[in-house]
Image (cartoon, rainbow, N blue to C red; front, side, top):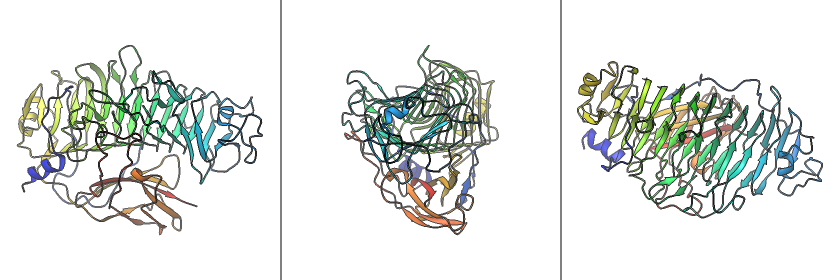
Length: 531
């Protein structure tokens, strides 16, 4: 089988009439075909929310809430409050700098938080160590319109570790609720598990200095008549910064990361996507290989300004996915964006671009068996493509400009773009591994493995993450609440992670197309110290 046939089989490019056309950007890396063995460690350097919003200490002091708690409780472990009472501030008892601990169990219904901290002394709401606190939105919002399940209105607050989901089995209605709705500035969301809602996380455009980091989103959304709806993250920003870093988004019915707004309904300013993983989004719907849904969309009906898409990793299983990276929405105009050091695999179109005053694509790696780049903009004076790499036959008509398909060389000569880009028909070999140390929780990291060689296990250097002598566990993000794939005691160096894969979680209420098992070809793990 030729390399082109191998890639075509791997990515299963399906020819179809698409509902939305946009264009693509390039990706860079080793074009030589040498095995990509070892670990690629990426250190996030993007802008972040004000560091004065310091994270809480992992001590167990503070206030306590439980599903059985009440307003008459003392807020202690033995006499906990209800969650609603704590989120209201508990009649003024929750003060800036306090920690509110969520004990294990299920908290049913809708919640609105007005508790607030101040600069340098945020209020921290966090799952109690070793327990599983679950907020279940089923029945808590309207059955006739999509409501908000967990609304944050208090500034200078942090939200850590707990689970937000909906057990409602109805997947054929757009009334499935928004899970976490941020309507406050100076907030931080860390290591949350958000699944089976409508939209996993929504940011109101007026909310500034917001960070979402280390969280896992899956199976959010609903099945519509023409395509799936509901995304992992729906992001708007009137001023920013809005930092979305080191999150995982997979198997939504809609988009993975959805940076979008309708006309007059918000802005898309100063948003940074850094080190996130998005895979197989839209692939659980009836239209899993025809719907114009992307793993990552940055673009809407208002111009994108000052956005950065850095160090992200994407993947579509063979036979699934249309758009992978979609930078720009249709033919609508945008100001500027930087797309750098991303690693994108699969889909019918790996990277598409819309209309931009300034579009900068550098050092990205782009690969698949279908279209590589689609550029629609007639005016390319503000475009820069440099150092990008494509794993695709350079003689294939896989590069597009202004509706016409070109070979790689013809595309470069026609557009004047990508003079330092390269394309190679050599298939990646070995393993490509990314390690993303958690910025907020020491001893925790995300490990992303592209297993081109179908290895049974991969060696990962975690010396910078796990102290020597520390006990650790490794969990597959597609089986978060199951058993770890491996455990051990760190020697301060590399550990071995098995690549057998797991069966992904089925959406509550089911789905028309079953979630794809990605292992051993691709998987995402969380490594963390355990006590």
